[in-house]
Image 1 (cartoon, rainbow, N blue to C red):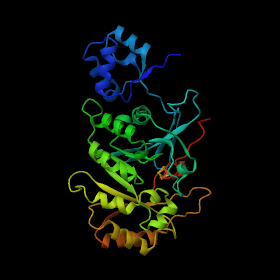
Image 2: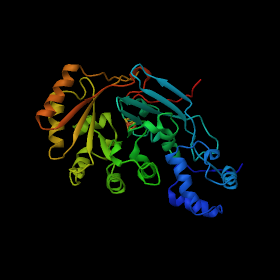
Image 3: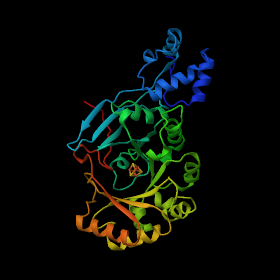
Image 4: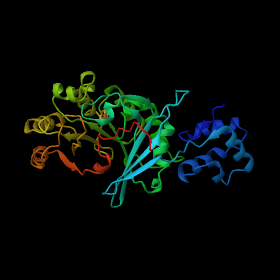
Length: 348
Ligand code: SF4
């Protein structure tokens, strides 16, 4: 069977080349971009300002790449978790692989937490996704489909790349998705509405900083190298201390922000010693720290910190002049909270 080209995720230039090859008029590429990225068309039949002949050619040679979610679960707090099929683009015999995205409505805001890989190879000890191993990098179309295919697509105000996977481990596709999201011919979002989170694959930082203006979040979780290495094996190859030193060489006084995510785990990383060392590590870097309650994962030894320890951790950082907030837990009842995404089986 001939493989139909997926248009979702194509840049304007790529669509112009495709349209030229297909014998379409020059401006057709721009029209397709508008339908795909701004009018959220599900199929070529909806692209009514294209000629019937062009639509028939598109139908024959291409597919939009939009796939509806297989399942949605809604939490008591309004958070929604979407499940999508995620076929491996490099595998001729598709296996049942799935990814999840989480919609977090909060008054006027609607933040979508998207996945960048199916599974993850970073193997963070506290994370449900890490425990399931790595399946594949998401192609650009599957990253964007999470945003385009949900009913709330037009209402989204913010995006965070904090779902399944490590975005810097799939940086080519993540950067291309960011280009589509922020380009005038794409979704034309301000990059300041988007945050990309990484465990800190330091060699990729210059490329990310150069290629986009989106916010950056670093998963810190422990300021001590040996303890962090136990939680996050990436520390052994790319120590966070070196990453922080590199971050200090960039300008963070404009619109772009860097933040540090810190999941508090009782007895592991929530003592005053950890808070003081975190403050010392970040000294001289204009940044904020987001504290996150640990969400217990069956089979893992970690437990949530008490409200008292959480408060005292926050206070120490604030006294050291660091902006430090406690992120509200959302969607825990549907396993949609931070670190809990790990779908391996489809919807029944
Ligand atoms: S915390 Fe993030 S980087 Fe670490 S294993 Fe989980 S998904 Fe991967």
